[in-house]
Every structure is written in C-alpha cells, then in structure tokens.
Length: 421
Image 1 (cartoon, helix red, strand yellow):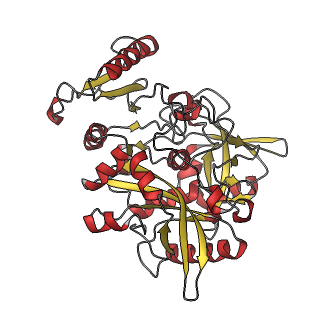
Image 2 (spheres, one colour; image 1 turned 90 degrees about the horizontal axis):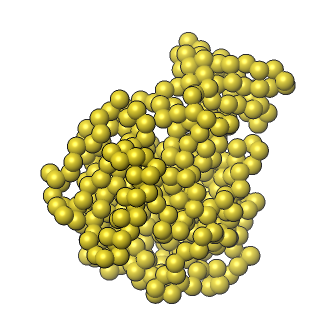
C-alpha cells in the first residue's frame, strides 16, 4: 500500500503538523476527525511527502456520512512522491497536459469548475441544438479545448477517484460498489457552471432497496423539478445480440436501480458505434465496458424517463483499470496478478499525437513507462520510432519497457517487467 505522510495545517496563522500515526491510529480517530472538521473550508493543508511542488490538500465532507477526509488538489498527484497515498501521474504524463487547462478551473478551496461541451441546464439550450453534430469521420482534436467532452470528463473522474491506479493492497477490495462510491466522491468538489456535479449524477445501484438506488431517485426528482440535465455513469449490460439490437432505442445497463429508463436519441447509438469501435468490440467479446451518458429527464402520465443526448464509452478490466486495447488488457491483468503497483495515464481530451505511456510502474526506484506496440502499418511504425526516441531521451536507453505485440501477440511473449524496488 502507499504511505501516509505527515500533514501540515495552517489555520488562523497557527501551523501544526500531524503525524501519519495521528491520522491512521484508531486511538486518535476522533481527534483527527475533529481536526479535519475545524480545518474544513478554512485552513491551508499541505502534504509532507518528499515530492516537489505545493502538494496542496483539501478537506472533503461526504454528506450523510458525518466523516471528513483528505484529498489532493485536482490534477496535483504528480507533485507527490510515488510512495504517497496522493500520488498519481502528473498532467505532463496524461492528457490533462494536452489542452485541458482552459476547461478545468481550479478554485482556491480545492474545488474545480468545468466547462462541458453540453450545458447542464435544459432551458439554456434545447436538446436538438445541444447535442454535438459530429460528422461520420471525427475531426482531429485541436491543441486546446474550449469545453470538455464526455469521455474527457469520464477520464477526469476516473483519475480523481484513483481507479486508474493499482497497488497490491487493493486485491479483493475494488468491488463495483466501492468503485462507484469513489466516483461519487470524486464529483463532490466539481462544479459544472453553477451546479454541483455530484447532485446531477446517476450511478450504479445493485439492488432496488439500497441507499444508492434511493439516492438516484432523489437526484432524478430534483433534476426534473429544476430542469437540469443529468449525467449517468454505469457499465453496459453483458453483451447479447438482443441487447445490441435494442441499444439503438434504449440503453441496457447494469446497476440500473433507481434510474429512469434511458431512451436513445435517433442516430446516437450509430454515432457511438462509429466513434468507439474498439471499446464496443471488447464489449461484444465479454469485456467490461462503462458508459457515460448525458440525459434530459421527461415525465409521462405514468412515469419518469430519460432521453440520451450524448454518450461516450470506455473499456475497463475486472479491477476497473481503463484499457484501450486487448494488448493493454493483457498487461494490466498481468501486473495485477504479479502484485505490482502502477498507474494508467488517461488521455482526457488531449491532442491525439501527445506521447502518453500505456502504463507507468510506480513500485520501482523511479517511474518506468510501459509501452505496447500493437500494429505494423507504415504510419504506426513511424509513430513507434518517434515514441522510442522520445522515451530514450526522457528516460534513457533501458529506462523504459516495451512489448512488440505486433511481432508476437501471444501473452507468453510479454517480456519480464522491471523489478520492484
């Protein structure tokens, strides 16, 4: 597991440092909670790990739990040392360094304001005008973005929830209920315009009489009353041909309890199939697949239902680690099986030619990028040479790892990973 480090809290010009033991020992739990409660919204907090940078922390309060906890400032994980509980890949190692600064506005209190491609207030833009008009051939992204797309938001929330990271101590603990609770918590300090994002979220509930199902009903009722759009994040139901045929008309998801039935806007599923060919191919082969859907709520004489106006798809492993190909899935599963610690950099809405490692080992003396080369067409081989030169310059020859899956795609051909420290 990653380490807990001392935390320095500055409140009313008084500076105090709280040890890792005080933060974690059961004996001090009430005292630590009282300390966080006093600091909530008032103090400046900094992590005491050996990383470089401000290492600012925020106190988060989860409604209904009566509990306070610490969280890193958004996209600041790279400032922490790789043994720190708040570590994540730095923005330069993810798509967050590729044009998202204009759509992610960090606030002094640690909260974040985002600008979504489609606003969350229905009366601002009618649905027929709000939904992006995407040509069959997607345009190449620009080097900067004026708004965040749904896939970018899904990547951001996955990163903030820490679901793109793995450590051996997570084994057996990353259940679906836990993963989606982390996603819910990740939205607590995020605002879309004047709306707190957590209030606009519909997340999986695995039972009709669960707290999560009741929460979905309450949020949907409030959004319907205020005419706010909602965001639904849920796994697609396991593939069957019947479900695939129905998808053009109605979403089929797991963990649907407390959610309204979601009907698809004409042409949306066809557009999604074109845009996310690899992800939906993996879904058809039985792999885990998560959808993020922006919906508008409607009320008929009998019930409340939802109309989907935009969506995006992401493939995940059984441990909720995002992957972009079957080769990446092999690597992620093997790293988990070997008890390694690693992160998966996410692309967000970044430009497509930004060099991002497929994975980063974090239990080595220093971070080690892992790269999978899965094709051998001319354009890809040119890109491969550019990546090799980039990694050699940044990490030195032998300072990074690769698997040439295009030469031998058998899982047994995967080279040994660099040794853990």
